[in-house]
Image (cartoon, rainbow, N blue to C red):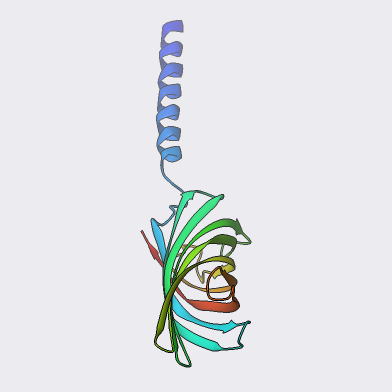
Amino acid sequence: MRARRVNTTNSLLIVSFLCSGSAVAQPVDKEPAAVVELGGSPGWNLRDGGWSFGPTVAVEVTPVKNWLELETGVTPTFGHHSTEWDTDLLFKKPWDLSRKVEFMFGLGPEWVHAREYSTTTNSVAGEAVLDFMFWPSAKHRFGWYLEPGCEYNLGRGHAWSVGISGGLLIAIP
């Protein structure tokens, strides 16, 4: 009789372990492989007071969850007698403010290709941003963002500029 109790107890433990193991193995919140940002970006050059505007596109990935996000993007801006192409790589620290709102602080280098009055220049800049991401559903498939920031250009008279980009977020599974 005692042998039956041990076998029944062992069987129940094995079944419980297998059932709990399969429940734990399923991911609760699956992170997207990347997030695409599509939007617009007005900016203001603090050195000469010139305004510019252009589209922006960026891709963001998460190499270290809750600690590091990398964003690379391109923004062509068009102003009076000038065109500028900014390509950046931002290192961001994320914070989840709620299930639908994220905040990130980012810093990184930027390459600036500018054409002003038929003169073309290339320079390196530094950029700092505050990134607010809003997701209408907790599944984070589509959303929108606002990203105010400032840039310090190491070329062209060491110009400071400020701007804000905003637009649509699309999660790539």
